[in-house]
Structures are given as C-alpha cells and as structure tokens.
Amino acid sequence: MLELGLISAKLFFKGKLIREPMYFMRQTGIGTGIGSILLISFALVKFPLWLSVVVSSLVTGTIMPFLLKDFKMK
Image (cartoon, rainbow, N blue to C red; front, side, top):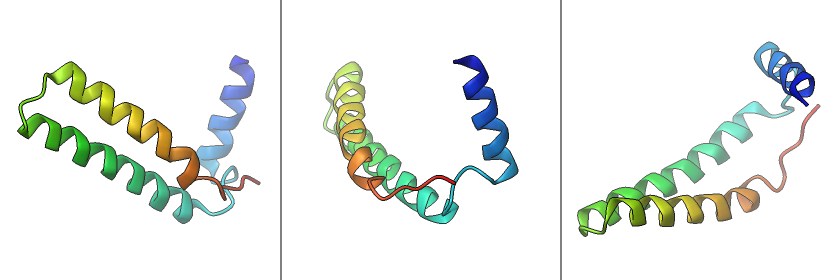
C-alpha cells in the first residue's frame, strides 16, 4: 500500500498522473472554496468552532465526488 502511494506521488510530481491537471485544479479549487465560505460564514454567525468544522467538512466531502466525476488519470 505504501509502495503504491509512493509510485503515485512520483508520477504526480513528474506530471504524468493526471490527464487534465487544470480541470483537476479548478474543480478542487471550487470545492475548497465552497468549504471555506461555509466555514467562515458559520464562524461569523458565532457557531461553535467544532460544529463549523464538522459541517463544512461534511459538505465539502459530499460535493467533491460530484465535482470530480469526470476526472481521468493517465
């Protein structure tokens, strides 16, 4: 398992793992942006920090598969 992770990391840093890196970066940026906006807005409403983190993480984790459904690797 560790060996697979190391091979994937090497291919990623060589630029040979992701077929469309700009698509991946854009979709990941959209997901993290939504999560960040949720976290900040919950903090401004004075929710407890742990609740803000849990809710924004759940929402971000839920939308990422939909954002990356067309993601292709080489």
